[in-house]
Image 1 (cartoon, rainbow, N blue to C red):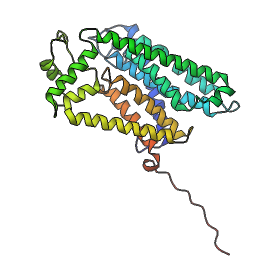
Image 2 (spheres, one colour; image 1 turned 45 degrees about the horizontal axis):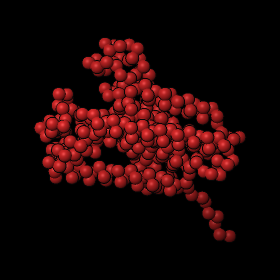
Image 3 (cartoon, rainbow, N blue to C red; image 1 turned 60 degrees about the vertical axis):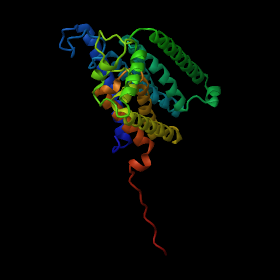
Image 4 (cartoon, helix red, strand yellow; image 1 turned 90 degrees about the vertical axis):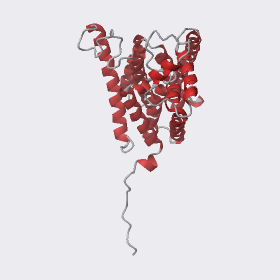
Length: 324
């Protein structure tokens, strides 16, 4: 992604949307075929709308990423084109695909995935440049769309708050796992227990606050787990990565609104935001498929943010007229 140009970036993001639709179609087929069907890659588990994923939360991540990509391009098409030039066919197609993702997310059964998608939809709207008072005065439909997005965002925040309050009070909850992981990580500081040693390190160091009658394979908090496994070096690596992504986001926001590079970069950045947020309560980056998608999105976002230095444009020369 760092070595390719704008056309390849758009094609790759389009391919990711197609993969999202394909995995969703596989999930519905799995539900219809049953547990013993060859369509279910994990016959030990009942189908849970996961598609290629064993964890339905990661399917929710994929759908939310696809929703962000579609939403950014939909907002750009609506904003940049005039009424006489606007392609309603393209806008309708994007809206239809986005609606499929939005309706499928609750069916997957991932509460955090739905909440993250609701929050990131507001981020997509704010970074699109669409919510402008001049636009609201000229076209009330823009105001209605902004109000609808604001309602979704507020509902997402309230749902997140309610979910966290309920989660804190449950024995062996994700909040408890993350808290225990941070505590055990402090015992292994500064070097950490070793990358890939979470399971034995957690089993040996967990207190009575965590019932170990079930297998705990991850901390359900990517940042806490890196602290336990890699110590100070892991924490610094995570902070450096987040700082690089924030720098890329700021660079994209400084680019000309509506430019192809900015739109493609912001679409990738909104998909990254889904994974970064969900990593606070799950482990999407420890699934190879989501890790590869994150790498694609990060490459596009960083390359688009620094397109002047990474993507070399071929110079154009004009012939100078000879004197006399």
